[in-house]
Length: 367
Image 1 (spheres, rainbow, N blue to C red):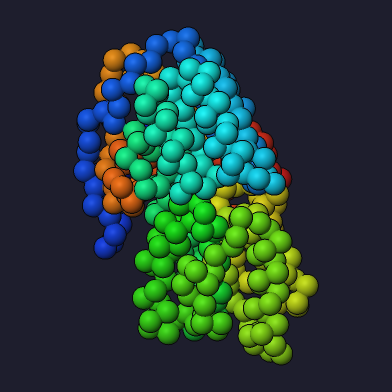
Image 2: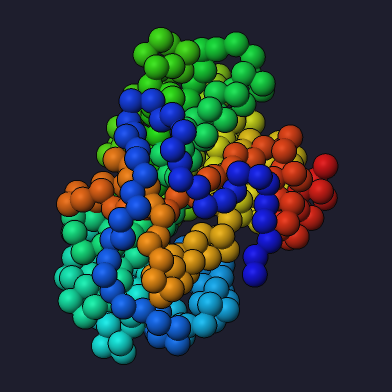
């Protein structure tokens, strides 16, 4: 039901991937749940507020995957104004309705302990989707792209872009991260710093503000206005006059565009800026050189991976998962189905988006 993209974007047991210093992997063939599921059962999908294009796309992707697999769907989004209690209530409602699987894209992965405990007690299988659920043993599986690898790809793209566009270093760079209530945000940042910290240490990169910890560079709520405001403040405080801003590590496309808005307004144009999610608004910017890179994580494939896992359980099969320390939720290393992210720049965009008609056409239009 879904189109395939470049080779390598698949459900992968990431057994050969070297993540220096941070990862210990092994294959885990043991099921994370003894829940009983059959075709025709209700599957609940609890998603956060529609703060990015990928979250918007997720609902439709899940609906099709669930119905095609022969299950019933209950898909709900949290309200942007009050996402955590709203999602808590939605999950409780799914349990009451008799959902045999609950798939959760957490609004805040640290505040769902009682809800996932109730889901497990009801006999449902609990799947953390795209974002891990923290500090509980009541999560059976985690389905996501390899988020540590995403951070590494972003950092390597930043270094490559700096070399291409700015020549030899040292380079003046600022760092941005996602929201502290998103478990992925720290994983993205840690992956990026695995690559960037040695370059900071040897002087290749200078973070002029001195802000290099997650606590200092996080962006509350992943909100564009928060990133734009911080970038404006950084420029005002640290980049007056002729001080150059060579690059910015941005964790996703929404924030990248906000950062670029701030740099343009301040006259600090053409920094190398990274991103993630392959949002349609960013593809033209990548093709014209305004934004340097993004990461492609096919939302349809990610939703399908979760439903394939549920189908395996319904068919009496043991889901194939991987164990990775980066998927430690504070109470256990959650057995995971990981997908492989793809770095996209102007040079490979058309090829990377083959099979995704809308993104491929945008890339071709910018050639």
